[in-house]
Amino acid sequence: MTSRVEKYLARLDRLSGGREPRFFPVESSRQGLRGVTAIVYDDLPQGLLTTFTYGVSLATHPDWPHCSPELCLSVRSEDVIWAHAAGFLAEQLRGTCPFGPGDTVDFGERIVPESAMTGFCVFEPVAFAREDCSAIDVGVPGHEGHDVIAVQGLYPIHEVERQFINAYGIDVFRQQVWEPFDVLRAPAV
Figure 1 (spheres, rainbow, N blue to C red):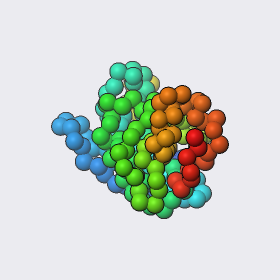
Figure 2: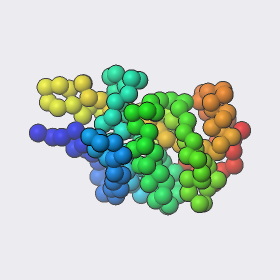
Figure 3: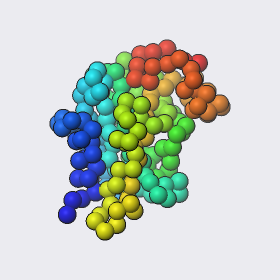
Figure 4: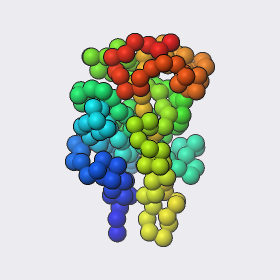
């Protein structure tokens, strides 16, 4: 029988065209809940470092009655600290943050030394087709549709942008001129 994680990894394998990822486990801070793994692909899509998490969906949240999230961070950088930050954030906030469109997270400091960004916002992953990242059925045979993952995009932002999103919403922010993968960009607001 194919396990939950094997089904998820099979979807990522199809999405990546069979590229070999690197795995960075993050130990769980909660007893009885397995850790999170940052699954990292270099140059996917071309020119981007992309990290998918696995482990957010192992937690529960009242906003996840039918589908639970995993995260996808794609950045124009070779610095694997981005991947570690996504894994750390996923492990620390799973079950407390819904990771829904428009949610923001204050990382509390520069995420990586190369960038002035100190936070993240969440909305659909724009580096991949919606159908590749939504409704990933990881349920056991005979219970299909009862354990579904939807990948949410995680985007680095400046503090002023995080405040703007919290005040005006993600849709208004997304109308600004900005490049979501550029970690060296100036604030869009």
